[in-house]
Image (cartoon, rainbow, N blue to C red; front, top):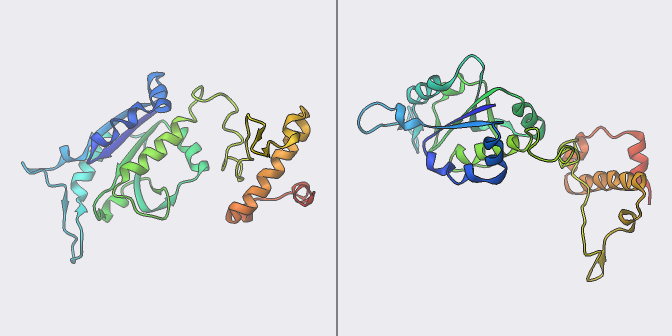
Length: 235
């Protein structure tokens, strides 16, 4: 997989590229990652990449011609282009898995007050990591790339991600380790029983109950089976 990031601040990614999972993914050749400075595609000695909004208003807008020159320099017929924007569809684990299977991804990091709306028409999709505003798209693209990297085959032990939160529409069940008794707060006995069938049933029930309590929005979207309904009602 090839990933290209168009950004005004390449230095922000220096330490990110050394993070253990991403570095392992790159070292093993699963991902190649290129950082492209949008400023290199600005005209003139001052390299102006932004301008005031037409019609007036606060802030500065990234110029369509500069962004598109940078984009056209790196994209090809197989590229999937993504603009990080608060207008975009909110990222979820399903979309992360879909992105992780793509051959060539190009991410555009917005900044300042935003990006000229004509850029939005020329990308394949816009993505957001949540209903809040960050200084720029750099933080958002790091989140996405981190999520993609850990799904590459062989990076994390096979099967380790299958029961994680959001993988199957539920939060992950509670996890415990030693000490068994911490100031009177004990690991549930069923987890020490060795009865794997009972443990699996217990964990699924806990995942259902935890999702219902902490993320009722997720629980409302979950397609609850009759067996799971009965499982929840057990005391």
